[in-house]
Image (cartoon, rainbow, N blue to C red; front, top):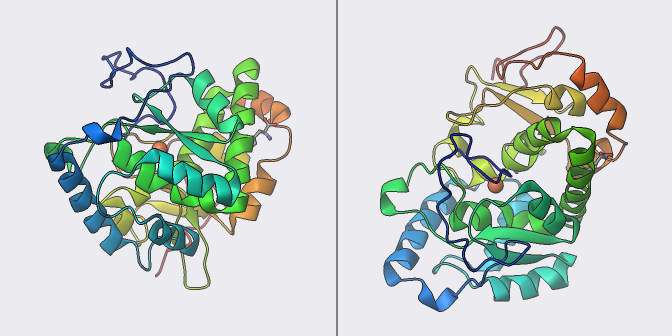
Length: 286
Ligand code: PHE
Ligand code: FE
């Protein structure tokens, strides 16, 4: 499952897929839950079932617990109901959007503890693979972890950091961090590596692939190294960055990134399959 996480326009310049005509200045629309068809709810249930079966032993516990509490297996959820539960838990809400939205609006939502969720669902032909994020990716992949207090705080800080990076010329670097953590991140657990990245959690194939000993790397997260690393948008990741816990993610991204951005501007980016001297694949030999 591959897509650009935060960009307003696809890189090929092709038109975005959603209906932006009723969006407000922050790109928010009405979900119009009653308009989903029975076919769409049925496709959601099929997607949900496949992922639900893959999640045990692969997703982190925080995700599994929150997902079960959401009770979202029966059909495309009503965002309003989710927002009420989420607001009680961590003060976040979800807002409906037509699809990808401009960076400024995206960061502004996060900075105010609002998570943008696309309203439309993929077609049956896109069951295994979709280019742009749809409601299944956005909701199933991202919403459960917003119930975790530390991760929820991190996402707000990321939003503020995005607004700041726009002024500092740091967006490319920050986008790589988002990609390799929020979208494709792995986390340690006493039982071994687990997934917290939404792009993996909503993907049928990568949820299995990313935890196997393959040519892809599994290395401890180092923020500057991560922000220097190019990523793949049309294949499984060639590197997965692993955190110890969400506290590490929060603390390692808390320092002022200004000097880091300046250093990163002075060096070439690293290919997605890089293994630097001294780095070891955590799954090598397993
Ligand atoms: N600390 C970063 C900065 O000063 C902001 C940030 C926070 C970025 C959390 C990502 C995640 O720019
Ligand atoms: Fe996403």
